[in-house]
Image (cartoon, rainbow over all chains, first blue to last red; front, top):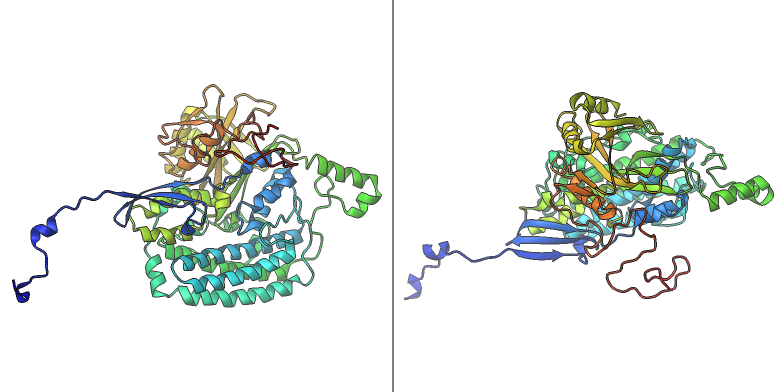
Length: 407
Length: 175
């Protein structure tokens, strides 16, 4: 056969030949960068298409509930830091808010404003991490660096407020353990300006980037019906167009006095979740500024020695002070027996607490409704039948945080 | 609060609710008969628009003043259109810790029921895939039961005997 006669297209029977293939099971994680370190996914693949996903969690389980049941109510607060370690303040305040609801305590105005500021600053951090990491894992490393630079600056401000970057342990039942530093508002304002610049950079790098949009738009879709059914809340539910935000639906602290919008998406894909987060971040910046403007002077914690440690001056000089201090430290706050379900809006959705007290100084039951747990439970609906490469952005935009999911 | 939903349930499924009460913070609770929970969940989802599954968990009543029945399982659902939560509760005894599943009504109940099984040993009839959620299969017992010792440790690989002045030694609480 000469070179001219050669026909490069294969013959028909060659095309129709059945290739014997088997589905391949791939283990993603638990020690895999795209799994954020703590989740194992057994992915069954047919070529590059995902047939079945089995998510296995629990590698970061710390016995959160059991630990809480064996310490006083105040001693639970540091455990709540470790739930969502990217936005610890939201967890601290959420837990404290639930206990206050159980006890029927109204906290001072100034404390409410500082709580909103703290929670919103940490919400910004959380969204920056989520969007930055999404860029990072899709190959846009620069976006991650801009996001993390802003996050570090915000964490510096959080450090000035609480004394720690991540494990804040801030706030006490009845208010806050300390007021903000006097020069803090100017520093925060400076940081917010910088954050706006940096998020604009991230926005410019990602939002209209062809590669980014192609990887995100139309991938990781979940129907509204399924999203509700699995218990999606927060940006992941709002990306489907369901306008449910605890801050608007059941306003707590001072959210009813603040002017902010709740961004919603339409299609429930990765791109909408990304856009929801970036817009929410801007709304949070707006809220922090409003809070600084409207914040009144005054105490930051209630004046009730059954709940709050007395001032050191009183402890060292009066018998009542010593007694109150001793009882609070040794026996803990006497929360009246009863039960409550209370929720606040965490960075990833509804952070709910079901607390049960039997009247002793320790919680009888602390149930935390971690938003990430329910979102992760629905992740196989979002990726089964899709390409393996879609798993990575989907896993990023649901922003699963191992600490809260695995308690 | 969710008074409306409980009244609707009473009207639609007679004798489903054993009891209604209000907690300290003003939340309305409905205690549902064990065998009716799936019907109640279905009614809430399909007829009353409580479509958002919030959460569920259990409580071990062993150390409470009234320790029987031993367990209660709590459910929280939310309606976006009505903006309210509904709080439900089901009791079950220690000898027969089994409750009908609501997994077929709310897909989100799948993991929550597995979690409840994992930590309290309450079985969900008809769940079909009741594996442990956070702990490992070799784990013995259900650690959130009140009679599970705080310091009982069951490591998969032996722990190094580190003397810890707060928790005691790291291995199994002994020596």
